[in-house]
Image (cartoon, rainbow, N blue to C red; front, side, top):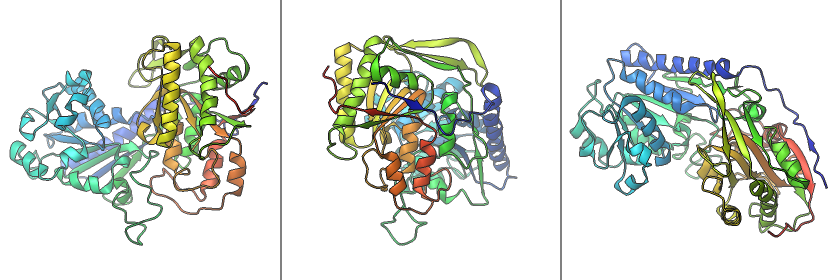
Length: 503
């Protein structure tokens, strides 16, 4: 039987794309740079600058620009860059090495993590595993908060490097990448490295810990694991600005982004309609209906009826079996993604890049996302099984938990909706960041699957008032937030026979 998909309720895309959209980010970055340089000059009133971004806004580009602008200021001799994880620090180190040269950029990494530094990054930076190995020529030192904030490290750095241009601290500026993922107690360990702090990050990612209930004391404003910028955003000494454009999604996905960041004054998409496309093989039946819907670029939700009972609401082998049933013909026939590339100002370059599933390059083509480790183990078995049966090369398909995949990018996302099979909205399955990360990784297409009944769940779910930390804006009811987000999806229902086809 065929699957009929209905159009999204919210489908207004807007008309600012390419350079017109990217110009908004450039202007916001200019404001952040001005606040930083004013502070370096001694005339500014800010000691913290927060550059807030939506997912896929090109925040790393803005961070690199701020590093270069700071180093050109006479009052800045040395900067530090930190983040929670090495997977965030390593790419930045390589990008800065490209811009500044290996002698000026030092990647400060734990000895047992040195082997994990990608070869292409190693060639662009100086690597130090001990404080005394940081060269005097290093104007940029990058390390995780655990490395730079280790016990006694501040003293070792001061003894080896001495004070920077400010005459008191080791660095003149501390930049924190993915700032909304760094817990307060981790920020406290590195805050004193410099008198000025710049935080750059996606406010829609998962916070370090959901602070909806505070296990430490009855003060809702206190939680040592909360994302550190939430303590400073309202301070008069903090400058805050939003990047108003996103580079990652297709134009047709923009209403979904706006559903998450609905309180932002503006949010535009650099990619224009037609800039990205998905070439499908010859398909039949439900697979043809589903992948044709995904190929429109719109976020696609497939609800499935008639399946056997799951092991648990978020551990659902029958639902994952439906994904395997849909993925097999797509991968067996082979597909391609087309993508227009842009210069730094958002203007399209000549030609369109085409990547085939037989010879993948760049970001992974397909990533299966789920919430629980057991579900991801089951999804990883699907990826391995399809890879082996179809002799797929590396980079075609893989699986991950949502939490582990935040900050990453892929061409197609195939995900299980966090509310699939749920009987209520709880702190885990209804976490704003978990759903936001799930929905905002893909550059070409998003397929979300769930057991039928999401609308009924949201109608009957009891109100949960409040404004949880870590969200980009207020929401009065989680139920209403979910309903707004679902309204941006193309939706269809598959009346399945309950048994997936054996391959």
